[in-house]
Image (cartoon, rainbow, N blue to C red; front, side, top):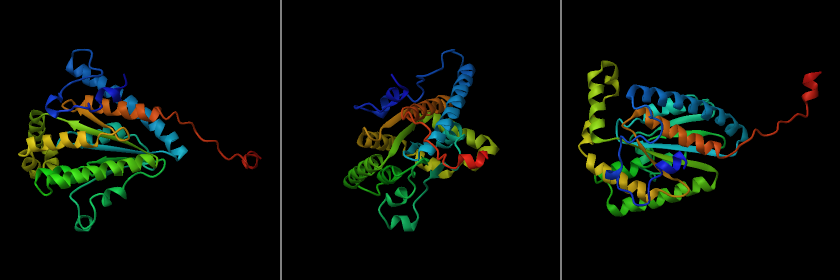
Amino acid sequence: MSVAELFHVPAKFELKDADASRKLIGSSTGQKSEDKQADKLQTTALAEQISGLQEVFAANHDHKLLVILQGMDTSGKDGTVKSVFGQLHPLGARTVAFKAPSQAEKDRDFLWRVHKEVPGKGEIVIFNRSHYEDVLISKVHGWIDDTECERRYVHIRDFERMLVETGTIVLKFFLHISNAEQKQRLEERLADPDKHWKFDMQDLAERVHWEAYQRAYERALTATDTREAPWYVVPSDSKTQRNLVIASIVDERLASLNLKYPPGNLEYSKLIVE
């Protein structure tokens, strides 16, 4: 069974049954420090492979790859970008971090600002948060009702299907952390002066709505998991396991394309030799 199959959201899914600390690959030594080191080494090796696959991916200039990272505050979206995708060539890859929409973006449909950021041919784009924010936070805070929420899920399914049908590979990762782990990470940010810049009082405000967010994510994952654009639930209490799982799935998907370098134009090669 592939890593993707192990972590694909099940048909009957309840987030309360998903263990955020479960370790399903690696971690065979029984020693925490040794396991973490092994995870890091494997992730680094996979990141190098992904970087190599990126080159042939870009050379073919055919497919597009969109990676979506969603999760509660402190779940590790930034860390995933750095550890898994940090070796990608910047000319063929970019990360888009979606913040609160501007007035101009609010004046248009919620997918407008997202559509213009999707990858072009041969490009890899990572969404640090995404169009799902316009359903999740809006539903939790009561800015949209159930009817509008379900309507947006329909729009998202149609949008992602359109992307896939026009050559985009869509991989969606939910970085699942426990309530206790989030509390610990927030406390670590407060305790370390070098991490104060990462602390935002809004994180505490949103933490109050933890249960509502869990229900919202559960519905989002089940409503928008499709064959074309699957969701993967990644246990993220362990940062090293989180990175290893995501790197493994991305590597598997790119390798499955079996891409080869396209033939070059050698018409004028003799002139160079001469």
